[in-house]
Amino acid sequence: MTDKYAHIIDLPHHVSKVRPQMTMYQRAAQFAPFAALTGHSAAISETARLTDKAMELSESECEVLNQKITLLLAHLDEHPYVCITYFVPDLQKEGGKYETHSGSIKSWDEYEQRITFDDNTQVKANEIIDIKGELFDNRAF
Image (cartoon, rainbow, N blue to C red; front, side, top):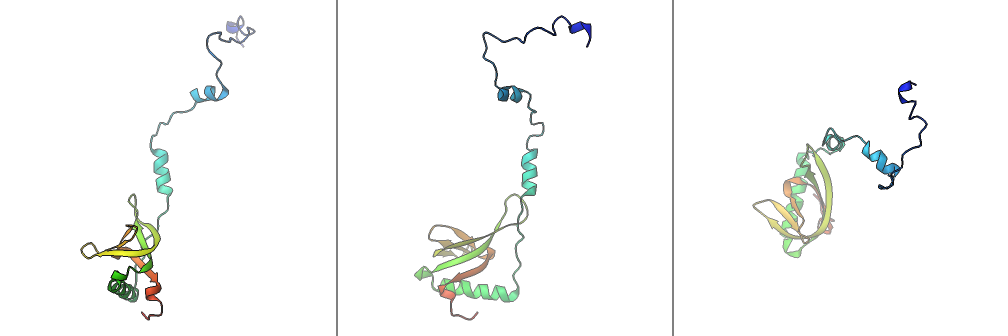
């Protein structure tokens, strides 16, 4: 060590009589690095988030689905209870996820091609990949 600091090296540590002593957490926080790249962590998380690709139904699967929708619409006034599996496109990136919703059908919007459940959940017909329910049991499609 140099002689430059020899006169202070053995002095006792200063303790303020006016200010309370900081906790170890508070002392560490003042030396913590700042977020130089704001949004970088969010971008990394978004990139890492997985999405599914939308399935392409075959012609025969589309035909069966169309028959089920037609049957469903024919019994719309009975408010049939069904379980619909459909694709929800992701708003942030390519792909999306599959969801299944169960409930009684309230209405059909011909213009928007959309089914509305009693709880006001709406599903577009072009996003549906499967429909199940008692209405379709014992029927050949």
